[in-house]
Length: 436
Image (tube, rainbow, N blue to C red; front, side, top):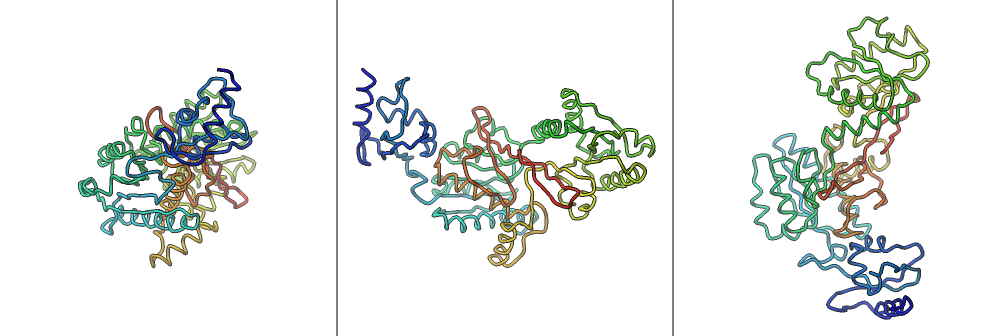
C-alpha cells in the first residue's frame, strides 16, 4: 500500500465524531505542533502501543505524526471504576488514626493534611471521595479487606507498619490500585509490584546517593572525616561509603578525632582551599563538642575556611544550633525541608488551626504538611494522567510545602521517590535548598 493511500485511510477512519468503533469508545484529537505519539498517549493514560493500535496506519514503521492530523484516542474503561479522570478520585487511608500514642497522633495529623489537600483541590475541579480505616500496630486488615468499597479505590495511602505491606500490596495489585507508602519502610514489594510507590529510600541507597553527590558538589573542597567517639553511632556505614567514593573520584581527604590535641587537629585542615567537615555520628551531643573544637581552631587560625556536612537527624535541632549552622556553612542532606516562613507553609498552619482547633505538632517535619504534599501530588497526577501516572520528573507543575517528589521506576517493579536535597545554611543568614 502506498504511503499516500495509507495516510488517506488513516484520516478517513479518524475524522469521525466521538463515539464507538469496533467496540472501543474513543475521542478524536487534532495534533498540535511538536506533539508526539508518546506525549498524546501519556496525557490520556495510554501506552504508545494502545494509541497506535487504535489508529490504522500509525503502526507502520515509516509513519510520521504531523500537525493537523486527526487521530483517535481510546477512552479507558477499567471495570466498575471507569476512567478516574472522568469522575471522583477514590482514596483509602490505612494508617494508625488515634490518640493512643505518638504514631497515632502523628498519622492523624498527616491524615488531616490529606483532607486539607482535598479541600484545596476542589478549586481546581478535582473531586475526591476519601475513606479512612484506623490501622494500629496491633490491628487487623480484615475489616478493610471485607469492605466492598475497598476494591473500587484508585489510591491507597498506607500502611505505616511493615507487617501490613505485603497483604496490602497484593490487594492493590489484584484490583489495579495505586499504593502509596508514605513513611520509611524497607519492603521487597518495591522491586516486584508496579502498583507500589515509596516515598523514602532505604538507608543503603541513601548512603550511596549522598556520598556520590557529596563527591560531585564538594569536588573543589578538602574533606576531613572526624571520629566523634560515639559507640552508638550508625553513621560509620556512610563515612565508609564516602571514603570509597572520594578515593574513586581522586579526592584526597584527612582523618582526625575530636580527642586529638588542638595543634594536631589543625593539621588535618587545608589552609589554601575550603575544608568540608564530616562527623561519623549524628549525635547532637557530639555535634556540640565538634562546634567547640572548631571554635578553637577558628580562633587560632582565623583564615581557615570551614564548612560542615551533617545529617538529616540534625533537623530537629535547627533552632538550638542555628547560629552555628550559619557560622559553619552547614549542609544537611534531606528528603524534605520545612521553611515555616514561606507563605504556603504559613497559610496551611493557619488553616490547620482554623479547621482542627489546634496547632500542628511542633516537630520537623510537619506531618500535616507531609500529608498535604503527598495528597496534592498524587491526586493532581491521577486527575491529569489517570492510572498511567508515574510521578516522573516534570510530569506536574508542583510547588511542595515541604516534600519534593520525583519518582523513578525500580526495574519491573514499583516507583521510588528520588527527589533529594542539600539544605544549606549560608553564612549570610539565609537558607537555600539544592534539589537533585
